Length: 413
Image (cartoon, rainbow, N blue to C red; front, side):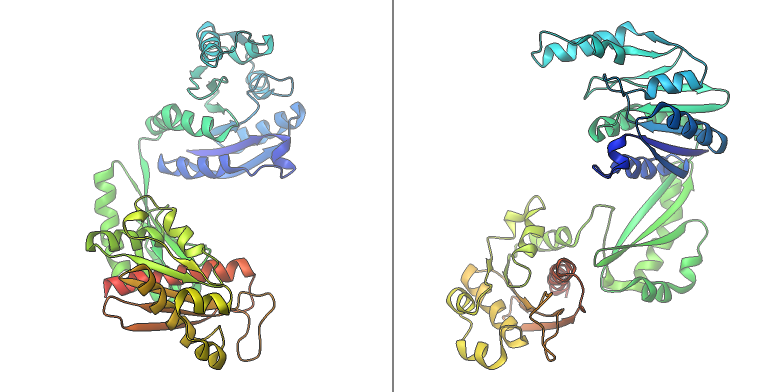
């Protein structure tokens, strides 16, 4: 089955808010065997919405709308879809009761009359309860087509899809698309494709790569009747990819991160890490502390931007700073030793570099970074990165990820 997503809202067209609803729906539709070939954004205009519905109905089995179910005069999605399908809207007493109850729970004694409009639903539709807002959704089955009306606020839309729509669609398709995401760090898209070679031509499961800031994800996808069959199909391809890429694969999961990989390796070993950051300005520590449980492996770190603070807080010898400069292998190593000692950590990491856009020289151009790591046996390793004259934000982001990856590999080895 094929689907088209129509996101309704002038604010989307003007770029005032991002269309995260379409991103979520496209991902979830694939999980229930529905292919999303088209996405449309249309403003709060009845005629243009009718045109979008007509086009979508010609080329897709399922049309999913988000937005336009509110109480105001420009919230017309439900009425337009009903008209398009030749249906009138009738008051659903149960929906009205739930809306009134929600207002009562919020302590509001008066409910505006225009909220009643939200309880007027296309005749004979399947009503989708909204457990997080006032606007119910609807499913209209008409002339071999399916129209699914979802609210615009992302939290309401996601909950309604997960609680009601997903199972409805899964029952229609009879098959589910399963995906497994491998997270890969330390290699670019073109080199990765070359390294995997014939593996990239696998047909079931398929394999696709997606570039993300500083890394690449590999999505292995198969169509199966249930999860056990999917696992049986996915496992051999997963094993082959891991065999080829080795420790460049740092984990699995759409939301898995290098910070999470570091914490999961430190915690069972009872190890702690500390970071001394210059050009990253605390970004590495922020990534680590974004993960629940970080306090078990991270007591603290420092941002030492000036030479004075590198010496004062980390004990970096002034003669090293004078001879080699703040951006140098020697300083990164000294920072790593210093932060490990100051915080009593098992692993200390020192980061220094030129993030730009200014400050670069012929010898030390923008994008040069040194990451020092002092391990449990006090041995020190340093990595030089040459990230090129990219945006400052990108240089800092990639540096932070390389630092975390170095910690991950140090623990594994």
